[in-house]
Length: 170
Length: 127
Image 1 (tube, rainbow over the protein chains, first blue to last red):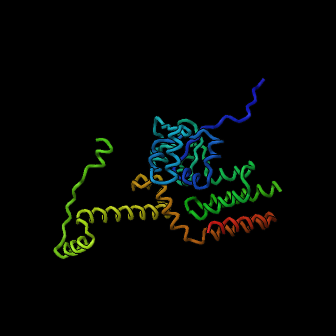
Image 2 (cartoon, rainbow over the protein chains, first blue to last red):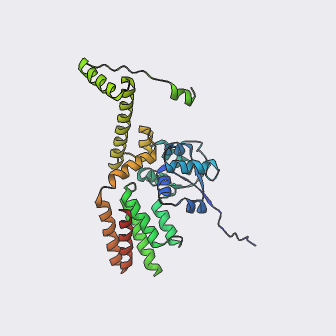
Image 3 (cartoon, helix red, strand yellow):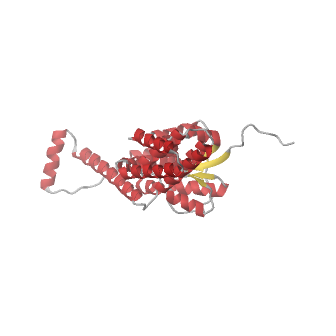
């Protein structure tokens, strides 16, 4: 007989700096910790700095062991900045889901066969799961529109998905 | 060399000034009660940092480089670059208009006026 687990086994994921900044800004950290086992590369940790709230949040979670430090042994992808290169290589080598909000490296990762998720897709999924309201997801999308640090086409796609989910749930 | 030792090490740079330039510098430093070395070091560092940030914002906005690449190139951290990008793009009303126009079209297509109302509310709370 198969054992039934009350909670699914958490998938191990890694992330780049752009995703982490947005996740803190949109208040997604608690959800992420419920859903995933997060690992961070030293290069992403360095890129976050120590003099800002997003960097401090990462430091705190790494210091208490909630987020673990991990690096890739090899370097398959050599392009781009230190943090994104390290995160992509770790995802590739360990077959991890990559949370990334920067379009260029996200495309590079996808082309190399890495499974990628951005914060807009993630927040839309939370809505689809009924963990946040339509008001909250639209608030997050409006915030990201105002920030100008994600590809506008991604926001539009997320908006379409939310509209569709609302229609289907009506 | 360890990090702390490296940080404490002082680099000397010689700056050549004309008599006129030096006089201006001297006058200002006297008024500010500051040494010329301290003044030039602060000024140069702040100006260089600002220009690095401007370079990063421009390169990111033009799609020429990713945030991580710019952090590697400039030595600035990613959150600092992102905040500077937001400070510039936040003044652009076109993104907000495009968001609302898309929400309006979707609300109409799905016969869901409440969707547009929520989008308007979300945008209003961001202003």
